[in-house]
Picture: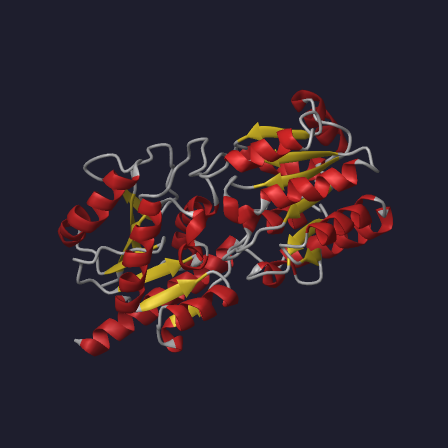
Length: 380
């Protein structure tokens, strides 16, 4: 009999809001690539977003109520899911977002994206912080195997959550083939449609404190005094986003900083291609999908030199210390005034991005399912 893998995909959301961020797309691509990665396994995904179209080989079951709010999702995954998993004869559970149902006795694989709720607790609302601080350590310590999406996160999990190193595996995220250089005519038409300036620096991500957007705006303010260039801060409003908008007002940059809001996934390649530079000065990242996507599109990138971002970017972008506003401003000036450097980093970025694929992410994940099952069999 093949192993029946259940995936708690209740966080999957194809709506146009801040929930459609990194964790969401990790789940989405994993569901789409797992059936091809290992056809010897059976897969059932539990999710409530009816807009998701499952690939052949993936069975979908809807929870008994919508899980589109945190409290509904938590109640379902902790109290209802264990019973559903037994009813559906699931052998192994993958919890792809930090927390597993603690009442379930199935062997479990848990994915951890980062430990920002421990390291930057002030950047979280109280309820979110308490939930993750309480449930994540319990989930990973009882898991058969743990997936971390970068080596930095893997080391964090081993050290901070005290999980044996042999049970924590680094599995990088991938990049979709849609992220690629586009024809100049398509880019020009997109800029005209959106009313975008000829030259702009792009940030794309959820607007929340950890992304360091206020410092990016301050660095841009210095650059804008010397170069005719705009800043586009694209992405949904997350939490504690008010200081970002306030700082634009204080610096008199209302006409130079643009907030287009949430960007649908299908539009992202156009935004990356249209930008002259992509800047992502995040204080802390478990992986950092936006810089990888920008590199795949041939857009030169600037990222912070902190946490996992150097793993993703390698030598294909400029790195700066995230608290260093002047250093960030100098990096922006360097790229915006040096066309040959932009071309060099664009070429390096495309080559670097080719190392990451969702099919490889799924292949390695399926291997970890087998490890978890073997461990469970040995324990019986």
